[in-house]
Length: 368
Image (tube, rainbow, N blue to C red; front, side, top):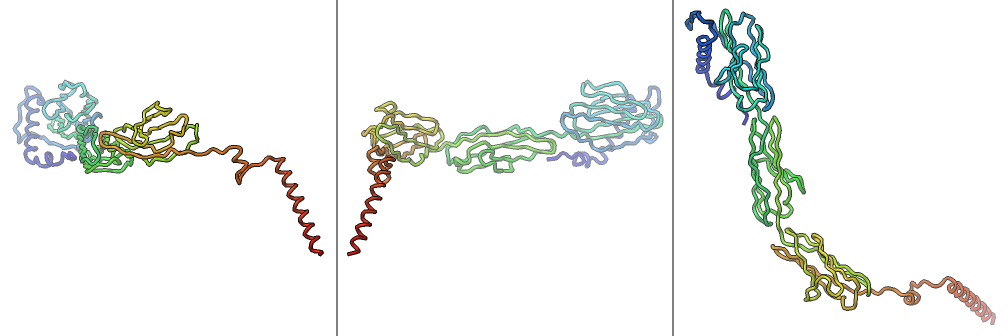
């Protein structure tokens, strides 16, 4: 909500504000503006007037200058007042606030300043001037703008998948700040333009960092909330592995789970343990490896990986099978065998001579 001093307070005072000004002028004339020994004129004989300056809008922490024109006449008394007390009477400082000081004081101008302005400084200020001919007042309203400050924010949340979640963010400031929620990671989408963010049936994909932003004409404030979503393990499909006898083989089990899952390996229905029968189990975060250091005939078969957390479990199966490594004899006998270079050349020459001999015999037979 913007603070507009022109309404309702300033705009609706009417004759009340006018009466207040007359009383204020009369107060100064009676108390200290009228020199001692001079008679006090009746209200009908006094020449007074009042002027309302434009509102002064200043940001919290800045410095504001209050200037009062003396009007060119010979000034006998002058003072700056706030809502309830005198700040300066001429060059004499009445305020005990160290932030208030005199800037200019002469027959033309009477200016004071207030440093490090705060919301408590907001309100009506009056400059009262007594000249040789008349007394007058000039009033101004200070409006203090305040940068947003988030003062209520939901704590970091840990929930199970499917739960309903509501985040809350409240902020103060002048003008009243607007609020918005955004999921920073993983998507960065705008989630809400309100102080509340409702997430019904939250899924694992909605976990991440949520940012609340409060903003107005003066500045902004940003704070974040972390939502962690627990869900049961989901194991990736197992990939069968072929290994030759005596070689090293590895089965890898990848899982997605929050909180982190615990792994168990099985050979058929028997539990497999680390460092048993030449097998090693290594768990690194979401990955578990079953390593065979020196594969034997007994190692071939079916294996199962199970991932478990407090919300459930998931399994996947693997087959460790044997592959035959090619030998020198099988390479020579196979269709793709690689022959010795000299033997190959000799056989080629024999084949060529045989073909030529058969051709000659065939031509000889044709003559008969």
